[in-house]
Image 1 (cartoon, helix red, strand yellow):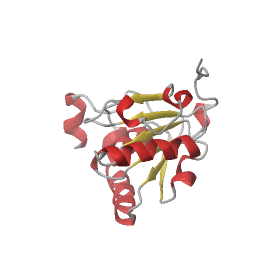
Image 2: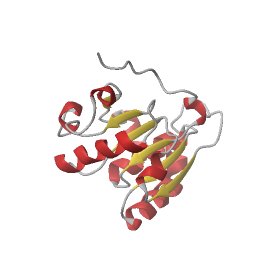
Image 3: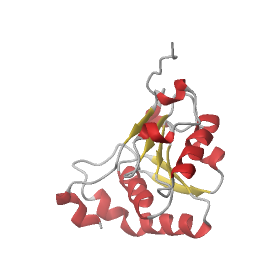
Image 4: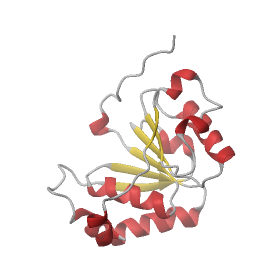
Length: 161
């Protein structure tokens, strides 16, 4: 019988990580920064990391203006190259890496090693079901993985993109 997973502890005070600083990753990160979360963007490319942070700084007011109320705290973002450092103590990780199955499989294997055991592992994949990405992880890890295909409603999207 697989160990039962429970929700992340102290999630209100822990960061979120977005894996991938490309078009989708930076927009996911911006939404969470606008909502008052501490966000880490992990990308192996320095240019992608820099572009993601720049995008958020230049567009955060557009994202923030769409919130129904102001967040309790100011959000922040930082870009990190090292995966282990990026996911350390996170309560949620959004995987938004390129749609290459072996890359996604190895990403989840790395997350199993480095992310906290109570961390939600979300994939933003539009090509693969989450179960297809988990051939290299233990059964206990599979219980905390989900598809999130992150999007903003059309009435909101045209303001930000």
